[in-house]
Image 1: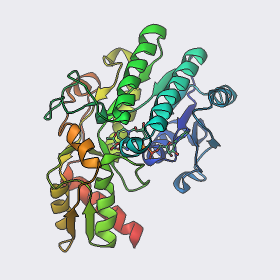
Image 2: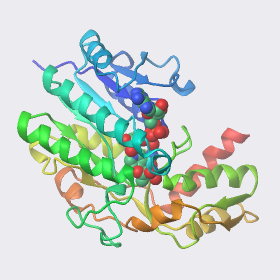
Image 3: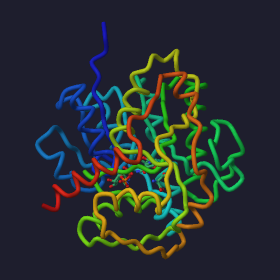
Image 4: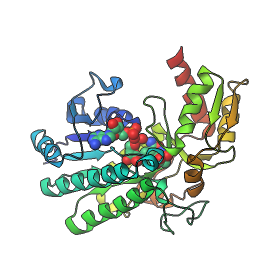
Length: 318
Ligand code: NAD
Ligand code: AKB
């Protein structure tokens, strides 16, 4: 008999959590997807399904919730991102590592059917190839966030090899969305630029004009996550984390794309500490293994994303 899936999303109030929870609720039914977070529920999720207040660092409480709610799958999104992590490296390491280990341990003990945990392009460092960065290459991250993601990937692989835990992962590029604000990453400029363009027609960018980074529009990221999680287990050949590619652009290029719709939009460049982090990451990603294993294909290019972002941000400010 097929298992009736009951999903716990940890970090559901964050940039990805809100949209992923909504997408999962459409597939599995509102009552079968429990949103949880340390902070209060995001208003967009209110009234759409169950919510519990939960700290992923409290393993006992997490374990109680998993048993009490008959959870079969966990999507773990709680983390400290790259820019915030550099301000508080201990906090980033503790949350990003211990949170994952707590979830993996409970998954093993309770024999959960599947776990999702995202990694990031932040695993790569200055010695990794800049263009079409491959799945397997030199990986020497310089941020505590990148170190925690790389270590996390190998913990996922270890739990899979040793105990058969079906944990799946994507190395997301910088994600761009309008529903929930980003949470302290280096790529956040590519989200902020849209609201500043609509509100003030000006943006002070903390990265230099020609800083190319791998990015992705949220609808593509949500679809990639669901496609990976729905792929047959025998198709999954990467048990660390899959490279995933969407769009690569620079602040100069996204500004020009916005100027097609808002001709008097202006931008200034004042690089800060985040420039060093951005410089250490690849400019584009080779995701041919994801294409081969579970047929990944992004839908949004820069043009299509800019149009959709501006329409939705303009609606929000209307
Ligand atoms: P976010 O910061 O927007 O959301 C994280 C959520 O986790 C927040 O709502 C926060 O309150 C919650 N949280 C923090 N500590 C917690 C704890 N102890 N217990 C429970 N909840 C806690 O982050 P996001 O952008 O949604 O990222 C989600 C995941 O995706 C992270 O692992 C991140 O590294 C990864 N990722 C994100 C991006 C991106 O561009 N957004 C890119 C690559 C990878
Ligand atoms: C960040 O900038 O820290 C995130 C990421 C690429 O992981 N958006």
